[in-house]
Image (cartoon, rainbow, N blue to C red; front, side, top):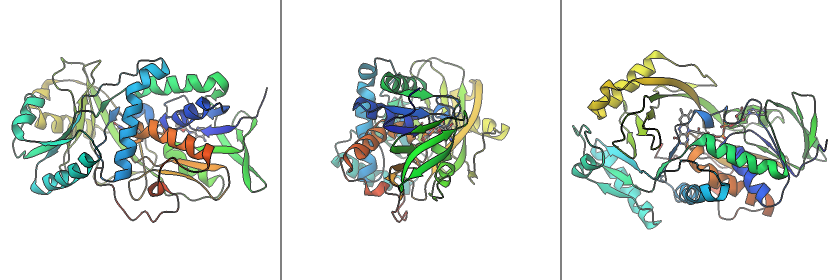
Length: 376
Ligand SMILES: Cc1cc2nc3c(=O)[nH]c(=O)nc-3n(C[C@H](O)[C@H](O)[C@H](O)COP(=O)(O)OP(=O)(O)OC[C@H]3O[C@@H](n4cnc5c(N)ncnc54)[C@H](O)[C@@H]3O)c2cc1C
């Protein structure tokens, strides 16, 4: 068998497959390695939300470009990916949040995002039955939405396999270096594969992969739990984000009618931990029913957990390391699904042309990490 590719990718989630897809589209032969099955990491555990309401020009731009890619995906990949632009609604229950949204909306509108501040009356129209107690208004962007991560990863992987190969159940255990640049990887199946470029797209495992080459990168996994309910008749269209300390976020699956949602635990749960808690299921149910009382009787069907892949400033890392040909594309901080298509495209362009198509210094590996993404 031919063991040589143009690019080797470690990780079969949205980031690895998106980068592989765009590289393959440029005619490169890509080998992608996934230690388990495609989507086994965070991607298959996410809730499929897609938004563009971020707080810096770069993150807004990346998210907006990603949405453009989600829009044409069905055609481009010849695969329905269940993309539905149902919107995102960030609720303001205090004056401070309202002011933060109003400030951010100014910047987002300058970038031509179709976002605006909506009052309580309009929110009642958008989300029938919502509890408006203490509610001041919200930030609503109708072109945000949802899609199905399993269908997208599957379609990207199929395109990679046209000219390269996707190896599942194959763990990358070491990375070889020759003349100060990467040249190979060795796998759990005892094989060695060669390429002058290796992309670390291992999501929450990015840190362990980098450590194979004694490189320390600031990407730390954190456990996040999620639930999905039985399907019910569709009555709202958008992801509702309640940013109170004891808030939560959830939407209704456009194609199936189930409600899917999460909340960010306080304190957070560091490390790779795929355990679940009864406390979460109970509390998530309570928080959803507090916002929309008629959800009280809806049955939770499943719960699970996965990892956010956090960086200190809430922004991704997309950069080459000090070892030539070894790239990090990770640290998506819980936004990897929505940013994935554009991040994959950016990675492919950067690797091919030696420079990114636009300034992505905020994603550099050697940045200060002092800033903070506000819309976390
Ligand atoms: C509960 C929850 C809800 C979320 N909701 C959203 C959401 O609504 N919208 C959104 O945009 N994001 C969401 N996210 C975040 C999103 O899931 C991640 O940011 C994204 O999936 C990261 O993708 P990835 O490809 O970098 O990592 P992953 O999907 O984790 O892929 C990395 C892969 O690398 C593999 N791997 C690791 N080590 C090796 C090795 N040595 N050899 C071979 N393979 C290896 C892993 O098995 C894994 O499959 C959510 C996450 C969670 C946990």
